Length: 141
Image (cartoon, rainbow, N blue to C red; front, top):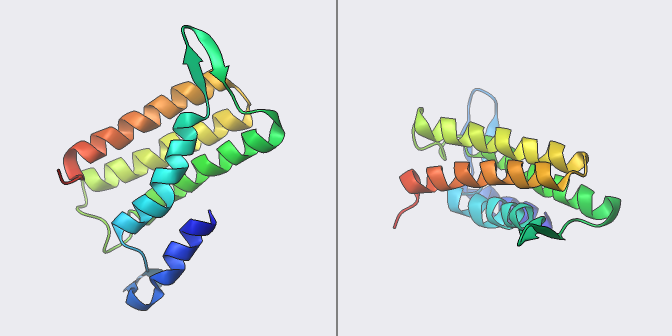
C-alpha cells in the first residue's frame, strides 16, 4: 500500500484535473496497474488454495484475513481510479470493466471479512475473470 501511495504522489507534477469534481489524476493507467492492481490482486489470488481437493493455503488469524480484505479493497478502489479522465479509454466497455473490477473486488473483501476460504476463492475467481476479459480487449500484446 505504501508503494501505491508513493506511485501516486510521485506523479503529482503531471496531474490532469477533472474540472467537474476537482479531481487530479496523477498516475497513469500503467502506474495504477503496476502499483496497486497487480500486487494487490496477486495477494488476493494467492490467499487461498486447494490441492487435490484439500485446502492447502488459507489466511491464518485476524491479521491475515484483514490484510486480504485490505488488498481487495485497494483493487476495488483502483477500479474507481481507472474511471477518471484521462485514464478512461472509452465510455462503454472500459467503464463496464472498471466498475466490474470494483464490484468483484468488493465481493472478495466481503468474503475475507467472513473468513470463508471458499467464498474468497469463488469471489477471487470472478475478479480474475473480469481482469482477463478487460486485458483481452485493452492490454497491448
